Length: 422
Ligand code: NAI
Image (cartoon, rainbow, N blue to C red; front, side, top):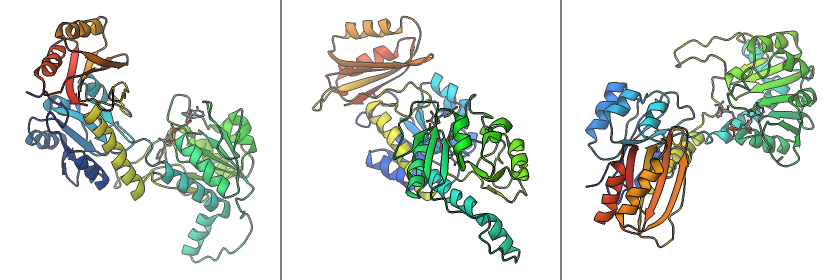
């Protein structure tokens, strides 16, 4: 009998996609032999458990966005859930520690909306430079604010990018296409793209830039990294953009600088506190300050980004089913090894185990007793769990492969063990 999560050629997996995940996901999963059910809305805990249980005892995957919560209770109630796809960036809605403990990989899509954010940044650089929002608001009030005063081209101006990762580096390319000079600052060694120049310190970048844009993650180091002192290093009349994470900028300090005119304008998409839903009121000290463009965390909210997210997470789920790859996984150690040879017709035992002393020697003694020829082994571990591939040159339908999988799975340290056709 197949164990839960054996590969498509061993037992058929199914996926339940909720919250109108983009259709690229269902298309891709179906093309890989995975049966897909879709629902437009999210589900509460009890309904999610019921919906998954209705799908039977075979291997299941669930795809969610931000509204559905995959809690510890869901993971316990549906032991045949072998993967969770978060078709978004955040994973706070998933009980990650419990998923790891149960050997359930969780995949998200941190980089699919990169381009969408970068486009909005360069658009807002122009909007800020021309005072478009104030003039538009004035026109709505019947005021004809036709004047060149304070309006500038962005060509030849300096854009300082803090955080030169996926988004920052794309902003760099787009800004250069506008004829801007680009500076960047990153704690990691990053090679410049185009003609961008690296600033050795953040202070130097702040002092040299006409526009400063933030593209860092939310970490202990970045929280509050632009406080009053750092804002003070900025050129008088410069602009600030934050489309990264809300806690990176000290908002009261920014407010002061905007009111005093030291900072000529700002564009913010993220805030220390954000409404949980579209019906909740947005509260911010920046409301009512007309040289601040405030957008409701929409930097990555485009149809194209949703389509990319659908493909990115579906691909991760397909790889997990097909080869046991955990690339992009946020709960298990990341491991991705190709089949040992191109014409291989063998199988891979994918074992997730508790990372405790002696675990590997216990597995290896089971393997040694089995008389099955091993053609490859790969291991990745974190502090809690290990992920091990054992590639053998026999078909997954061969009783010996199944016996070996079962014997490894029976070890006390094993959390989950699957058999995959290579
Ligand atoms: P990334 O991980 O590719 O790049 C982040 C860069 O920041 C890395 O190069 C890293 O070395 C650098 N960094 C980290 N700590 C730093 C520090 N203390 N000082 C200087 N540099 C530092 O991330 P990506 O994809 O470029 O995303 C950047 C940010 O944008 C993230 O916070 C992400 O959550 C946010 N984001 C916002 C969206 C929106 O809708 N507004 C959509 C997508 C991402």
